[in-house]
Image 1 (cartoon, one colour):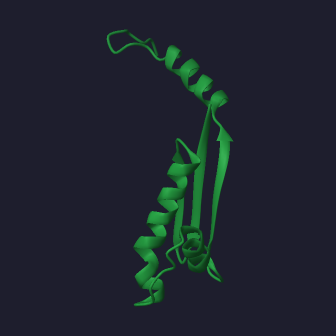
Image 2 (cartoon, rainbow, N blue to C red; image 1 turned 90 degrees about the horizontal axis):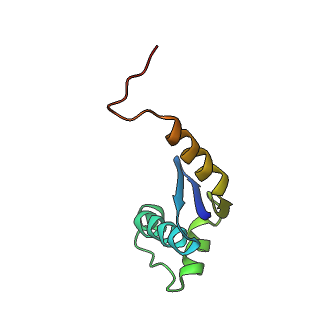
Length: 94
């Protein structure tokens, strides 16, 4: 099982998000850029091309990363831990 990780570091913004796909991470990155564009560039219109818009936004300031991660081992660990958690009605001795 794979997931996509989005990391954004820009002018005090530190963001880490996990998405189901690279396309979802790209969409979230684009949303961040669109939300912050006016604060960074004022009335300057962004490029129509999404890639150029993101490149222009991060040029000389900030960084971003979209990466693919394998979460299959994490999923198994979560499932293993869940199986060790007692049910709500079960008594636990301390």
